[in-house]
Image 1: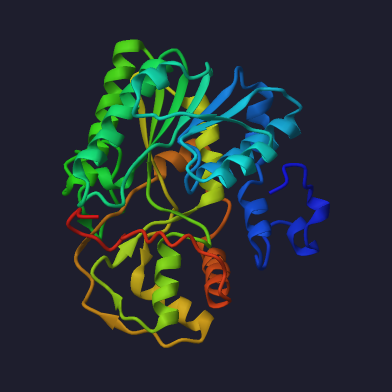
Image 2 (image 1 turned 180 degrees about the vertical axis):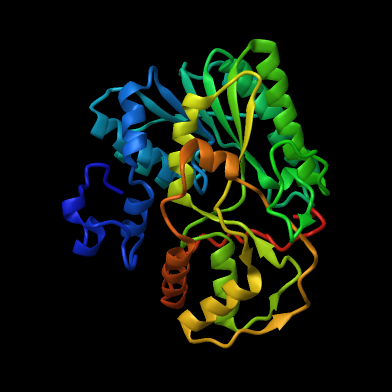
Length: 359
């Protein structure tokens, strides 16, 4: 992705707002990394450099792209650093082309974390989910030790830390979803390790006086991965769609990145916990049927909807930041076209239908 690309380089239909279609990875990444005016304005007044810790994963590169482009449009020279192990050198190189500095570090090494460069603003993105059942000890180490090391290193910074809606229990599907004051008593090793991550960060916040936001995300989507891709692939392949987790929430990844960056200004001590997802409670059955219509495929189902699901109420985030900019109906159209056309995917299923916490 080219950080210097302007709207005049894009298809004409894009320049008026949302694209009707997204056909290439380049177009997708450009759109995911396009900053809103609020993000550009933020960078115009943001004091200090930005470190994105664990930024080489699924969301990190597009969040970095948005930050770099907002910095450019705001005319500032703040450093944007991405800190990770970078097992894939191509990701490191792509981030450097965007204008970000990259720092290789083993985040499980406390000495390496202590030596990380200073930054007044931190986005913390480290987490382990997949393989939890096979490697529970590593999961707990990644999700509880690393945040302690990073919070200690950046104790004088503002931090937005990624968490997950999986810290909540399943709630009745008749409800609007879990709210931030609900108890964190979920099932399974992964979800409980995420509770541990939050508690460790809260402890560091209270001990050091660090201003933080704990961002409970549920779920981010784009056309290469996410709940909608999982469903679209099942529908396209003719596999039966399991209705057990009958309802869910999603939010466009570009809206996630914009919210994360804007939340830096809302970091607080005690830490602010906030849910982030779309406004809609989506029916799995209806979404699968819509994907089937868009792809010309008959949808087959198995099981039936349970009376509970993993749902989040993000009304507090919408009150603070406004509504998401990309409607899920449009994302469904993009996703159906992308998957049916053989578009690139990351091959990382979300396992969103898991109900027992065993990922």
